[in-house]
Image (cartoon, rainbow, N blue to C red; front, side, top):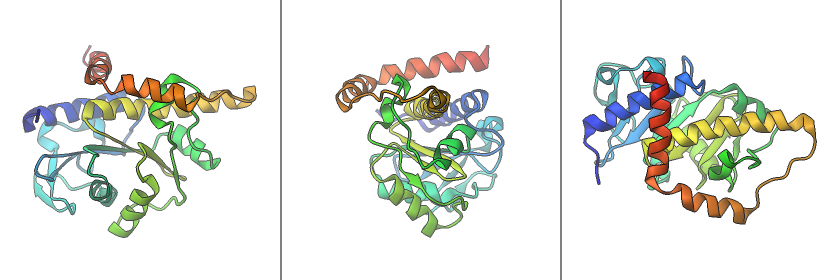
Amino acid sequence: MIEPLDAVKDKMVMVAKVLQHQGVVDGYGHITARLPDNRILSTPHMPPGKVAVRDLIILDADGKKLEGFGDPNGETAMHTSIYKARPDVRCILHCHADELVAVAATGQEIKVIANCGVAFYRGTPIYDSPVLIRNQQLGDKVAAALGDKVAVLLRGHGGTVVAASLDQLLRHGLDLVRSAKIQIMAAPLGPVKVHSQEECEAMVRNERRADVHRRFLDYYVSEVVD
């Protein structure tokens, strides 16, 4: 079922507010959603948590602005490259969370040592450059680093996560940063036990239920609204 554009806009704004409230994004970061006609709905070049529905912009598949008054974010090329490489991806979040920067700086990927990390059990590749993704060539390199995974870490920069819906994107964004935080907390304590592939696959199958992600969104929205 295709959601009406107004509903998608409302949800994107709320997801952005939750991500700021939870410390995943701050003054920077950006969220996009692929629309059914391959246009892209995007937060503009402003703090994501401050975005209102009227601020959202619509881009074509190459990142050219079609509608709206704000400017596209400076790393739009990362989003357009990923959408072109991954027909399955409907939504993208890019953030600069300290926890992701810290883990990527060690050369480690996210280890699944807590249930919040199961979406990333196939790996979180590291794009080994801190340079901002300002053009299509760099965007293509990030898309290549991401491959068919759910998230990619960018050394010295942050992380990018993809999803099939905005509900799922919120879940993935929060879980990625939380997983990095737990990994950092566990590091001084000694060797960690990583979830097996079988354990992760069983949990991922359950997480595919849409109601799981909606419940997650509803809870965090209540934290922001209340």
